[in-house]
Amino acid sequence: MNTKTDKLRNYTIIARLDDAIPLNTEEWVTVERLLNQVSEFVPMSMLNNVTEAIIAYADDQARRGYVLGQEDLVQELKKKASRIA
Picture 1 (cartoon, rainbow, N blue to C red):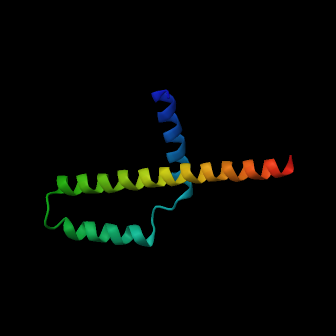
Picture 2: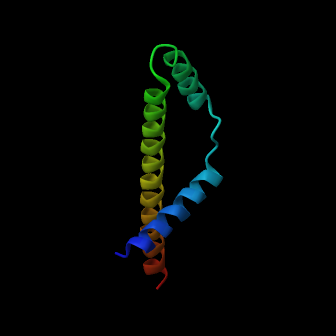
């Protein structure tokens, strides 16, 4: 596929997820609290790297989940359309 098209598609998915998923959840507050505690013992640059890695992983998992959900929706719509036809 076209790399530019892939990047645009990923950006669109990420924008949709950012609009739909709340950022300040109980789970994130727990992670944030733990990161603050860890920051007392590790260099800030290492903590920033860990935080960025967590965010990148979570974004990728959310994007994959979104794509899978869309694929499931398409399959369901195809089933319904074939029953109608």
